[in-house]
Length: 309
Ligand code: TA6
Image (cartoon, rainbow, N blue to C red; front, top):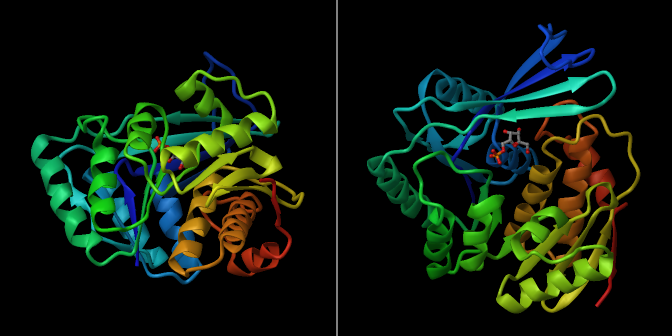
């Protein structure tokens, strides 16, 4: 089973608007409310691919109830800890020129008791899982090393832990050496203070992550694909050109494909192809964190994996 941790779930509100002007009253032409937070996208895609998967984290208030109901509709298994605070909303405003502006709320404040309650739930769910994925930011109140704590617990049980987060949570998470990370070049620049001006620089950073003990580091290059490391080898992953409708959730869908590939014991080339096929399939849909299985199957054979080192 894949255990997906989404500590800071959200109701993702997607507004379609003609234009966006600062300081004016604007009316949205359309709005969609969907369960979001990066981990819920991962759980959705893994479930669509037919994998046994369960989502956990914190849910609270009316927004938490809305997400719980939606997950049931989507057939996603869930076991969340209830928090007193209200689960957040995240806004994505998509204008006719194709630009996307996102406003991400910080999320509820988690108390010390709620933190302990999650750790108990995590240990219980971990015993039934073979792969763990933790995605997204953390709600307020949790210590910055919380992901590092979760990684250490999973490593003690020899379960691969896939971490997709940013900022200080990523820095502290990396120190605990998860199985997988997926920083982009800006995040590497911010973490290490090094220049990333070329693919050679990316290859060097991937090798350094592997030397530190991260088994599968992947650096995302956006529409150009990614560069990944595994077992001291470095691979370039190239995706086919597609008509992009909505790139939000593509990174989350990539992580879902990687988790499913690991869970199925696939070869590294196939794990990377499945991740890239899911990320690409998501960008072809209006809905964030959603793929069509038949599209993933078709794209799988079109992903190019080239061994660089
Ligand atoms: O990847 C996009 C997205 O999942 C949005 O839908 C929104 O929920 C956001 O990320 C949350 O990101 P965060 O890092 O704050 O958890």
